[in-house]
Image: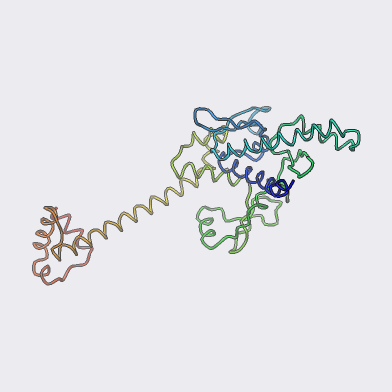
Length: 306
């Protein structure tokens, strides 16, 4: 019992973090994560998958597979094992204490015994409860803001502005609807944001293309996939500009160092000797006196005398 007292406070946290791991590394919708079952995780050929039901873009319910990270796979496996213990506890309560329990309590236990949804089990300390609540509630485990409280900084706001998404909420019913963030305001996490982030992660790190995202997001049209991933392309463009700028800086630094070394006669090798000889021809007396032209002229020197 002492071990249980020590470990139990972590049980609910495990479920919360498992939920975040899944939405962060799968691109699944909130409803698809909530539809996961105890045995949804499996591996094939060294690749990890989750199987869940898709209903938003299909007629009726269809079971499909999502590629996920090993951490998400292991999280689902762990929660499934925990659920098995609690479902067994429910069976024992019904078997031995059904006559002394309220009718609605027995019905809840019977529902949980037959049901196999991953996130419907409440991991209580001494009993067991089940829930059919699928939507995120203020204090529910699947409300990510109950896990993280991260105030935004000036750099965060600049990034949000650059990506065109500096709004606290896009829900018309929210009092923070389309209000911009200010420094110090906690970032409003939603499960759907992770779907966009996952698409951005794939594109920005060149781990896949639109077709790969379309498969894992279960989109019917490429246009919808592009909506989710366009910020990844924006970020790549920014990275290219940064790389080109850094390349120009390195070239400038290299040229400056080479000219400085040439003036001191420290350039080694046959290439270094040729560079010094040509620099002497171009600079003449300036080379011996140590008076050098501005760096912008060196590019012309190299292009003319190479």
